[in-house]
Length: 366
Image (tube, rainbow, N blue to C red):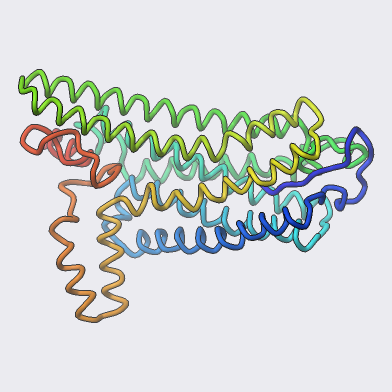
């Protein structure tokens, strides 16, 4: 969502220029963030989409379909947000209600689909841990595609509500929202609540995964009865918690400030200082879209292997072939690589525990 600010009090705001109150220094700072983060986010997610699209193996796995959906949403977010934000604040383009709401709907759709795809990824990992033996039956490729269809249909539908008529009844005389022209407080509250619910479900899913991992650690420690091994497993359990903690910290840290300002905007009149702060906080959502490929895609060994193979086909030189060949043995996953979290996330020693979440599925279902 791109930021706009309006005149203090309840006065009229007939021209969109009254929303453009960022100072020259603030425009330079935010413009720099967008010019740097936008293209990087675009290229990162385009790379992830290209690798998944060109790999027959990855396209068959629900986990990578969800990651591909996340990359597609972040690709759209980097394009829509950056172009709309810079067009409005740096170039002072004033659109009519329909054009403005269409652009805002694109930004809303992209970010909503991004958070929704993160929820599907979290649920995929939850099923992989809690229903390991029946994971392949519960989450087939067809069901994954159906869930993505439902997700994108819901986000597109919700994002189009202002265009379909749910907008500020007074237009700009006075405006309803102090952050977005033509947007009603009811819609802003509804969309903010929707995103907060998605974030809460993500938090619950990862909490349940950690609880299951802790139980698994405890049971393996009691079976082994070896203090040294138990301490090693506890260290692995802590590493898993740290990884999920980092994921949740980045996610909540990127979204909570923006959503807080939106909720406040529904109830009170924001000051210019608060509205300028919202402008900077909104860029955190773009930064989150830039970080997502690093957290969810490029940490997966199978996807990195597919990337190296794609580079090998592109360059066709012996150096590339040698590099890929050397990395092959350590990069193959044991099973379906179901919701693989990272290379270093193992639930314990190799003799008593599984090397990755994917191996839990593979071993229990065999």
